[in-house]
Image 1 (tube, rainbow, N blue to C red):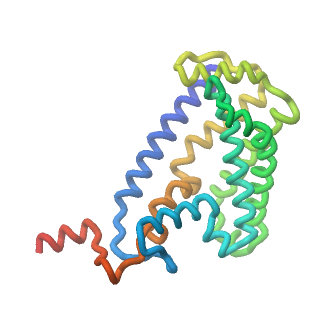
Image 2: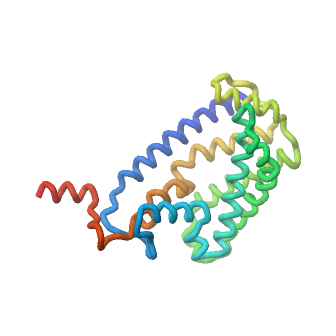
Image 3: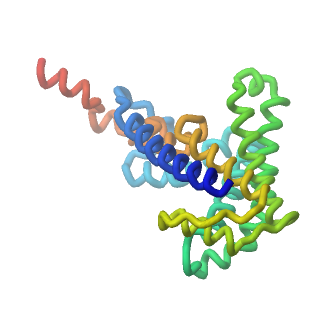
Length: 241
């Protein structure tokens, strides 16, 4: 089991990094032939940066459009953020003070993450128009995230795993000096699910966290009257005509 999880984790890491790099390259190459910034939009680049920060950090547009969806999204995303920050203790030695201070918050943030996910999942059954556009892959991804949250929280609140052994295992992965995984079926299931998530992440709707930075409705300056917008591919035609 230890060898299988080790090989799977390395494979998942390679697929995650290569997949993200490829998708970012594809996003960056997509032309934006028109000025389509969602108004009211900033008229300076500094304003665009501030708008993007509000969008990523506070889900501004979601708050304006749907308060319940915004609340569920905040519960999930900020819960996940605290959980991930808490997990840094397994990959850093010595553990910084700020990560130690986060531990109690990250511990209970798992519940916020799970509640947010269950709410987001429930709306795909309850709301007609959302159910209509929901694909089987949406259910599978939400089920995967819920199982990751429940299995992780279970190791904290139900059946404690060998934390020292787990840290030896993760540090061994980072230094390419694999160490045995603690004998804990719940831990093996949790790591397997996380590896599956890493593999599908670059090729699923989960990539919206990266794609938002390439959305022309969000990253364009609203200055069509002051500056002519000309896509690179169109500029080549104009220069050669």
